[in-house]
Length: 352
Image 1 (spheres, rainbow, N blue to C red):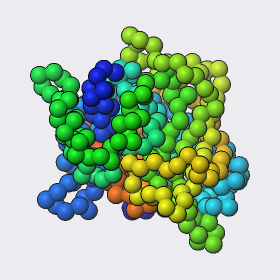
Image 2: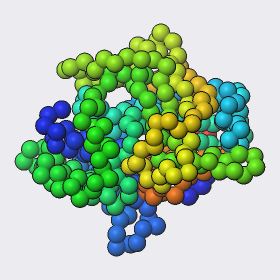
Image 3: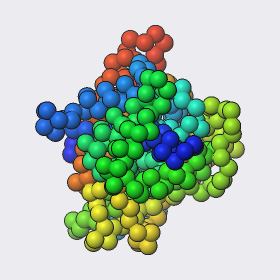
Image 4: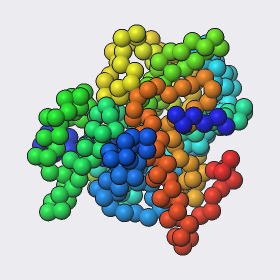
């Protein structure tokens, strides 16, 4: 494996989204100056906001494991040497989740869902990716993300973020405009299966001649259903997924969108125009689901900088920060799991 380390008043709604989106990506690099941000301080902040839940991820704590394969169609092989883009089948271990550090949060409490995947191509390399069902990230830097996490901390008196503090944060961060515009209309969906999941951050694909092209990717669902989640049911997403898989595998199209020369590549808070060229690289097929405490995804750290030859990270500072914070969160939860009665042992599939 090649690893490169490389709905209420508008403010209340946006504030709630900010709090959970803060948990949607983990960050902060140890490479930052010691007196500033560290992976530990950011994860500490996320943990303080959601409460300590031993053995669970500090972000996306509530989820399920899934497995299946990716069927490459060869169309992206002209742009990248990554084996996963060649024609053929690549096994996949994945995870659906909702953002936030509370493993008991109601599914309808947030409008964002996430998909994480680990591709295991036959050449022994891996591609890991964590995507979210939203088109743009709120902020551009790890420091701003940290400040957002602090602004979204629940007030002990109300259990909710302080609207005034959030308003001050957003006023100081105009780069959040695109996210806030999306958040005003976002609603919790009834299914993981009907969501589109975006990489948010940009990467480079590299062809056989060494040419690099900046891309963002997305899993575009073949299923369509605009229903909102059922009211009064806190756990409908896993049940919906189980019912759909009982009827047959679920599918998404992997779409690579290419940046124009003037598109921002290193800023996840800025959108690219919708007319950018794209190529459909194949179909993701999810055929089974497992509980997250015993499934193959349990011991996977979905670090988005674990990439195969043919895909490279951009210089987006959020990517390195995500990698560092994911590692810190992984170490915490696995250390806790080792002491929890009844903890499942790692599966052979998870440790490959």
